[in-house]
Image 1 (spheres, rainbow, N blue to C red):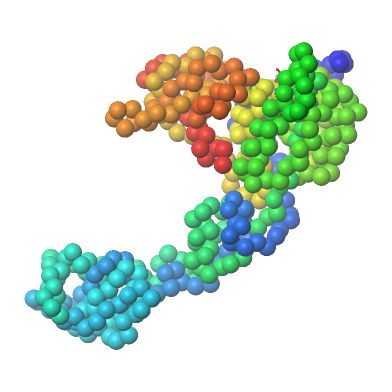
Image 2: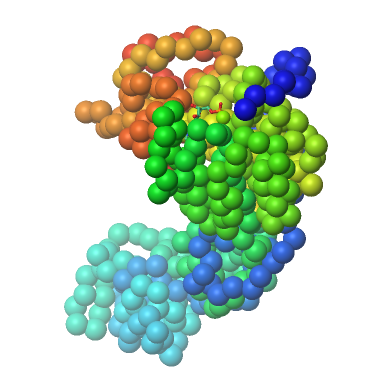
Amino acid sequence: MSQPATVMQSQVSRLDVEQARQTILADCSPITGHQQIAVREALHRILAEPVYSPINVPAHTNSAVDGYALCYNDPPADQQFDLIGSAWAGTPFDGRVGPGQAVRIMTGAVLPDGADSVIMQEEIERHGDRISVQGTHKPGENVRQAGEDLAAGGIALARGKRLQPADMGLLASLGTGEIKVFRRLRVAFFSTGDELRSLGEPLGKGEIYDSNRYTLLGMLRALDMDVIDLGVVKDEPQSLRQALGDASHEADAIITTGGVSVGEADYIRDIMQQLGNINFWQIAMKPGRPLAYGRANDTPLFGLPGNPVAVMVTFYQFVKPALLRLAGMDTTSAPRQFKVKSTSAFRKKPGRTEYQRAILQTDENGELTVRSFGRQGSGILRSMSEADCLVVLPKDNDGVKEGDYVEVQPFEGMMS
Ligand code: AMP
Ligand code: MG
């Protein structure tokens, strides 16, 4: 079905990747719903309030090594000490260590009163109940002070932190069993396109299976978001209006794919604009040039292009940072990027940022290098499946020679 174009080329804004990202981020603020959860459910949830430490970490001054606890402030000239007992993790020595005395101590055991240092067992000689310290040492050696990691009452984890495995362990180390997190973000999505068929349906001539919904499902699940899959929506005004209306009421954010390119099913833009305030951008990037962003009934809406690779690239450059901010995360940013040596040449026209699929390798000197995946068509989803990073060629770049350094964004981290 085709209808007359109502959005003229001149009404479409042109933006750089960073401008678009910042414009979108500036428009997104966290949802308000919170919930109380157990620490074992905390992975990838986002803290809705800071966690204060109820205790000192470590709780007691203790030994960092297996060795001998003693007072090294004013040691005997011969560096010999009498062994008067032992301290184990969980079983402290309950006497006092006097001058010229030492206590055998294990890692994590409470430092006995009177001791200020622990000498590693490799640095003493033991003769029965007497030890002789080898070499010179600094008072305070190998001792972890109470509260040195975290003082009681201090902020252990800040509001807006997306919790990782270390944070779960940290919470447990404080004795904290429950935390307040933002509720999960609800994200609705649908595909547009008359050529699309869903799984289980037979393919007619010129028809293709809708893969974008499954890619989106995976990308959203990896971010621990609740998904509302609205299926394939016909390129037809009534269905589209209905789908957008429903999505805007049920979800915190909406993602559509297809139908935002200039000259393609332009009435999608009309309908999006009737429901809210949507900007249609031509971004100086490849893949992913056409992109729509705005609000449908006040719900943020991301209109991604239909090409399967463009969907993923635009999701990670724009949608993921914005969704994480909506979900409550305080600092969200572009995917992490670093420089590595390229073992391939990359062809590139100046004037747009390009995201090319590539594979990271370690060369014989142990240096990380990157090579092109080869065919870069934006419909080739296999390139995203087999590659493990994107090479980001900046806007002004006009090509890369073998041996040049390029910026890469690894999929690990990006996709989790
Ligand atoms: P569009 O942005 O709608 O012009 O689509 C660009 C290209 O992506 C076309 O070749 C579409 O057939 C393809 N495409 C659009 N949506 C999907 C989808 N959900 N799954 C797979 N391919 C799609
Ligand atoms: Mg289409």
